[in-house]
Each structure stands twice: as C-alpha cells, then as structure tokens.
Image (cartoon, rainbow, N blue to C red; front, side, top):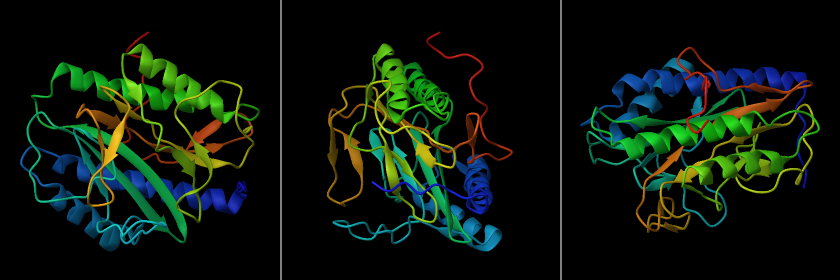
Length: 269
C-alpha cells in the first residue's frame, strides 16, 4: 500500500479544490426544495462548476474497473439510496432526504465533500435523527485525526456512536485518500477497533464519509451499475469532508462560507 504524503504545494492546491467543492454545495442549497428534480440539480451544479468556477466535475465519465462510465456530474442519493445515486427526472418530495456528493478538479487536484439535505417541512423525526446522527458520526471520526492516531480510531468512534443510536454502518463503501487521484490509499472504513490500522502522519489527506442506515447495514446494487440501496429499504444518510493530518491534529479542507458548523454538542450526549 502506497500512501502519498502531500507536500506544502499539494496542500495549498487541495485547500483550493476543497473550498470550491464546498462552494458548489453552498450554491445549490437554495435549489434543493420539493418539486425539483435531481437532474435539474445536476445541471445547475455542472454549469456552476464549468462556467463560474472553471472546475471539472470529477464524477462525469468516471470509470473504475468493472464499471460503466458514470453519466452525471454529481451523485444524488435519495432516501434509501446509500450512495452513487444517478440524477434523474423524478421530483423530490416534501419529506425526502437527499445526499448531494460533489467532487471537483481544479489544477489537477480533487476536492470531495457531501451534505444530506432535508426536503421541505415534512421530514419525519426518525429521518431527522438519522441525518443528525450521521453528521455527528462524521465529526466524531474527524476528532480522532492527529499524528500517531490510527485509522481504526476513526472507524471505532463512528461505529460506536451509530450503533448506540440503533443504526448500522455500511461496510462495503468507505472514505479514501485523495489528491491528484480521485481515489487513492488509504481506505478509511467507518467501523473497526481503536488502535488498529495505519498510523496517521502529517501530510496525509483523506475523506471521512460515513454512510449510516436506519435499518440493517446490508445493501444491494441497482441494475444501472452505480446506485447502491439499503436491502431492507430503510433510509440512509451520509456526510463527507476531506481532512488533512497536520503536525498537531487536523484541518478540514472542504470548508466554505456556507459549511454547516461542527456540532456544539452531540445528539446522544
């Protein structure tokens, strides 16, 4: 396993890419309302990335081994979709939840972040709780990041909190190293045992992006080859930041004016 330790120049460019990815989410937020289609959201984001930011949408035509090229510029995962939902012409309904996953490329560097949105004013309490617990999970994972810590510390913190809430952690998809390559080492799983796994050192950059299910963790792939859903049709939520390991702790790279603040207290405290 080869982990690319970023130079100061790499880090400076990753800060820019991360901010730009987050700014796409800031831009699209007012448009994420009942009645809009995810296809319309995709077009708005694609136009903004291309025409305003001068960035490239990393997902468009992304084609890892064994896959067909991804056909859209963003991922839109609604309700029981865990990840990689393909934008379509179905309108969002009042009461839905949807994750928008954005990855941009700027000057050869990737910025990757996602947020889960509550659609309208009829989102049920159990769905709101799932989204909040998932947000807490991401931040609890981020809080583990510092030199000398281990990847297992991140997964253990997330798994403990999610399961305390009565939810489950998706295991087949995980966070990942990122830089000039979209997905690189290390893999950052969102479950596990503290004190295990790779030791963190300054200059590592990776995503933390827990996918938490309201029901069981089992999943299934849809015929389109990309969309992953919960097997029991329960709701799923996800949040994602890109994180730099610093000399003293961590820096969140996917930050912009509209980034939701870290929790002042955790829901289950």
